[in-house]
Image 1 (cartoon, one colour):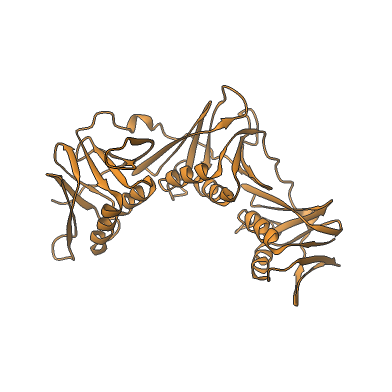
Image 2 (image 1 turned 180 degrees about the horizontal axis):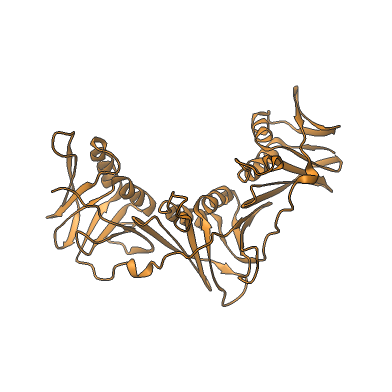
Length: 376
């Protein structure tokens, strides 16, 4: 095997597949990246048996061949090399990597022992990569981090013809985002539960492409795979087992009061006031007379208070939230203003965005936040 490739193409491809490298492999070969040079293309692949990533790029191939090399080392070397053509050449059981005066020698692993990776299922639909990345980031923040509750570590993807609904919850908050897409077949209806880390990584990494293709294996398939693809990059991931909790009934319909607030002002205040206390201790919010008073800390401990102007419609209300979860929601809304809707001091509040004070609500994203109890 011998080929010459541009550094930028190599780094882009290696960075993509290295995301699927196993950190605790059941076999040594899963620490490696497969390099397959054939025709005028180099194909890279890596897997941890849950996800599998592949990429390909054009190269000047002198001799076709296939090798398996240590993945993390290849990624670090690729990023460190100067922006010059890079030559890869197999020499016995080692791969020589040369760029200008820089030379590296990589050991090879047993490529024959590498598992066969799954193929991408047929495309279910496509959408703009930036829309996909924004939607996933807005929802993935609400996914659980506790692996003992695997169902809550996922993003639930529900497809109903031209509408895709993403949802995630850790029991203390719930994020729901709707987006429009182009399905490949009419009347498509399906759902999947995907690891939040995996889908967030894929969405963020594919923003360099114009569109993203999303694939779901049919429910009759044993593999239960989901796939993402864009511009020479693909990733497949096994769906999570279990049923995502029903959530639509949690989104309140009857609202007793709403507060319209400038996001940047509220976010700054939340972060300042929360400095005096542990991030798991409630931040107390008092909405009254078009003023929001924020308070944290009690007794002999450090305390902080601050007041900002708001536009309150309806009844005054006092409520408390986890300050980190509140800040996450304010950031995720992604608009200049946020409308917080209340149904009571002990019931969930809903955050929705507004581009300007007198504009319409952005109804495709809802961030539900459970209140916390605090000592009065």
